Length: 355
Ligand code: SF4
Image (cartoon, rainbow, N blue to C red; front, side):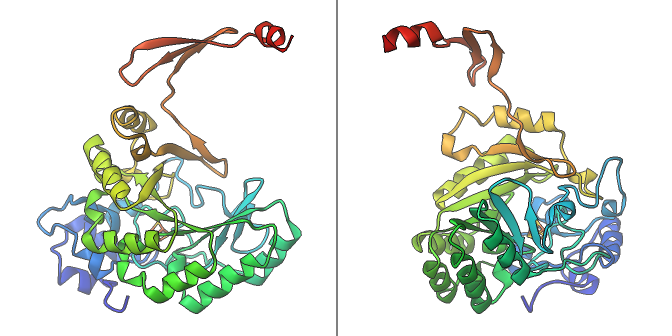
């Protein structure tokens, strides 16, 4: 963390920046800070201005343009916060934000309004208020701990947060969302694993977007987490010029499976201010999914989702394999486009069987 690249001078001394990147990096100080760990920086192809790793973490001038329909808070989190830092949108689960800092800053961050401390808005966190709220809302059985990146907190702080959650009987399922295994795999230490073991069952969702990110060090860190008994999932964001090709996605998802990580969600990029240069269309995303589903191991195919703009929550966006439906038939197509009919069981047959 101490050796992160955080200033224009540090970046320019290691990478020859394009004019767009230089201007973007100067402006980043007002919006989402520049931050790149040495591990992630070393994955950048210095001769390729379009390197997919570079596109994710090196600021660009386009970030300062707000396209129509882009939003400061694309997932409507601020309006669903009953307690500062606690987002309660779905009936039985909440998102608990525990820090606003990350090891590196993704230029498409959906929470860029509050992450990194560079923007105008600050993330207020009231952990005590969140624990009290959860005690008063026993319908909440699932807590996703996120931020920022929760694995930037000390082992002792994580132990304390997990312990407090475990004291609430109605909280059954606890997850951590973190990009640290990819940005800073050295953070997955024996001491951290001992904390996780204490608070089982605990699930972790990592975040990776491109097969280059799955380095030997990352694979080893993921192996340590898996060996500690932690089920691992991955969330990717579909990004133009990063992973919007089927072969790239397939290679990433295959590599993740070999690291014992289940590709869980592929996100349509949120309508974040300044993200137009990184967004694809949903139609392009569906075409990519059509070229994955059925063409490779089902475990390697995540669910493609969009967060309903303004706070609609995750909506699976197919593609759909149902061509049509009548009262007694469902018309389906398979991954090759061949059409099949599935006859629905009729209520009269069910009644006859019951006698
Ligand atoms: S690690 Fe997550 S929270 Fe942090 S900048 Fe990247 S997307 Fe945003």
